Image (cartoon, rainbow, N blue to C red):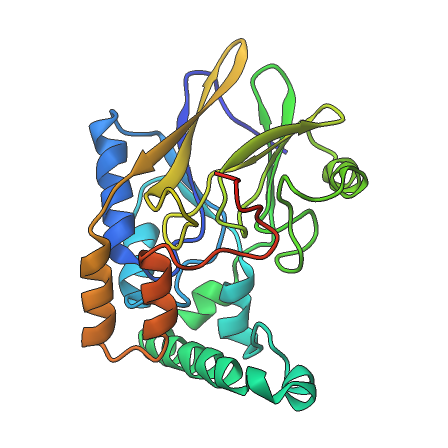
Length: 268
């Protein structure tokens, strides 16, 4: 297992989803903060947004960058889709418009990244990575949960027993996760579970891009959450200009109109 040296600052980013405008704002904030020694990405780079290739080009050119696979990255490679499934659509025909929009959106993104030659890079992304931090803390980075890039994932509103199962599966002291676009920091049976939030497509009320800084010292490590505003109306305009089939879905995120069923109404 690789070790991280003391006095190292890392930027942890997740769920960029083809939004190069949000990514540029985050990268500029990192430079304004004094820069970092490396970048860790927790998956979901290209799918959904208006500029999948631009995002891939930016992150791949960053120095000392590490990458792992998200579920939407795998979808682009193996041609699977998120829900609803064809079987669910057969049982509930009202889901057909959603199914069609999802299929068109992923076909659009697959065509873009395939034409630009990115499918081999996406297919080679690992499921996770592990490091040892100063002070012998064991770190595991994943997209959704230990051993899985998809599914229910981890968020603070899961039952305590489910969170405890994920904590035990991690076999780590610090577990970094993405997938749910919700920044959080919680402790479960001695395991610290942290989500940096999403660069793109966060949930209301705070629609700013989110990421975190992990800074090490000889005593251990420190985590700092960062929020960065960006021009969401420009994202909507750019999405329209490329005739993106997911325009309505993306616009709803940019305007704070999407909120998952598992997120309580009074949650931040």
